[in-house]
Amino acid sequence: MAKLQELQTQCRQLESQVSAQTWELNVLRARFARYETALRGSQVTVYTQDRDLRYTSISNPMLGRSIDDILGRTDEEILPPDGAATIIALKREALASGQPTRAEVALDDASGARWHDLHIEPLRNDAGDIVGLTCASIDVTERKEGEAHLRLLLRELTHRSKNLLAVIQAMARQTARHVGSIDGFLNQFSARLQALAASHDLLVRESWYGASLRELVRSQLARHIERGAGQIAIDGPAVALKPEAAQSLGLALHELASNAEKYGALSVPGGRVSVSWGRRDGAGDNALEFDWCEQLGPKVKVRRKKGFGSMVIERNLARALDAQVNMDFDPDGLRCHIVIPASQILAAR
Image 1 (cartoon, rainbow, N blue to C red):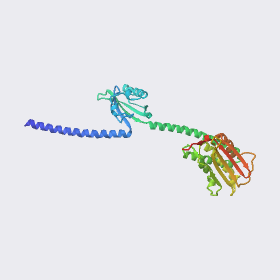
Image 2 (cartoon, rainbow, N blue to C red):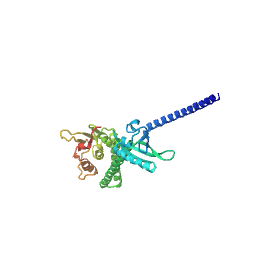
Image 3 (cartoon, rainbow, N blue to C red):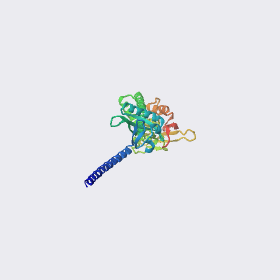
Image 4 (spheres, rainbow, N blue to C red):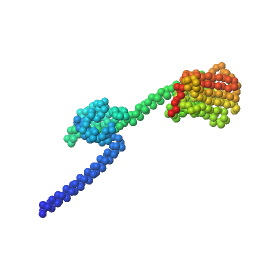
């Protein structure tokens, strides 16, 4: 009877231990499930390897492989040769030194090269002996591509900044040569800077892809259009200019408008300005023909000495865009005919 009671007591103790162990096992399973979920959400691959660099466990496998396809195998068996050599060297260094190491490595898969941030730590047993490695790897390809894109943007920004400063310096120098006072210089130079800024606003809006010719014309003639006097007519198909062409033509439009406001059709209420453009057919070059025509303004007088505006329109356009420029000082109104090569025009997107 006493033996039976002892067995019953031991049975209850075993049941209690089993119950406690079952509860602990369920807790561990829940924690492991949360751990796996977190890894999948973070796209981090965590794995262990023995001293022979055979995979002993892995969570969230990389390179599109399954767990069964990885366990028991080595890096040489599952990784691309070039990437495997680099990674194996890093892991053997960690095994030899007993120190953690970290590096960014490239691995090729079906979609191309993928970059991984790899963290390697020695795995020790209770006695402190190194028995393998624990590694964590995260795909950082998007970050690397973003960094490369940022470097490209910075180089492009530096290049454009230098070009812009060169343009501003040339404007300042040429403006100073053609005005007789500080006030005159400040007024003309400020106006030209505003014209340049208007072109840049359009380019920034399109991430420096290019600028709509219609919007470029309207931005440079905005002050005159906003008067609502109907002095300006604009006509032409949708055309996008490359950044350099938009910048150069924008300055030329500013000079044409300034000249018209001082001496031409925009200096009198009844004057008219027609701005039109179209692609040249029949010549085989598909160039863009741009026309500025003034009417009903004061009689045009040909000035013997050309000012900065004429230089911008004729010399700078021809040099910067390889454009053909013809200024016709017709007594009835200035006419400017510009032929811009097709190479300065962007394809529709």
